[in-house]
Length: 113
Length: 111
Image (cartoon, rainbow over all chains, first blue to last red; front, top):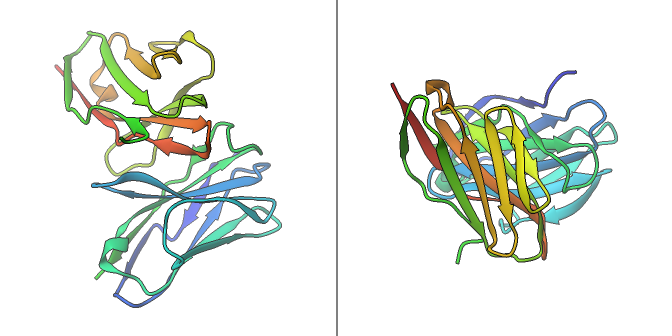
């Protein structure tokens, strides 16, 4: 069974631009969570989607948004990029309930110049 | 107080020794506990999860949970250089229905 895939793997943007990242969960998994990882803050929870609905949201500004499609694929969008948004963005999928085991994708490394 | 705390390390152990990684959490209602391994430049990889007090063993890895002390640990027996990585503790359940990660402990296994 294929693992979690994320595209693109690397991205360079400039301040003020927006970016969309994509995540395809493991086949059969319906829950997708997004995390931001930086050296200083570690892994920070962004949001979780299940059945196209956002079930949980972390403490990030409204510039960070996401959505999930009927096939469980998910996208996250960051608008008006700031230098501090440079990070590794990780997507994780799980079967259903949030408390179940989460499996991570390879991540998208975003650099904002 | 951070929700999940880990010593950042590095924790250095010789090859063949036991590595002991510790994690404390603040939410007494937490229900699920996970250990992930992350190699430099890679994404986290699940090693073990534990839900009940006591020990859980899987090969060279043993997870230990003490809910009364709000403490979870990971023991790695017969440590190998390939075990050198950052180990992330994650906690779920309780008042915050989300997975909260510690900042990780960097383990170095020396030859």
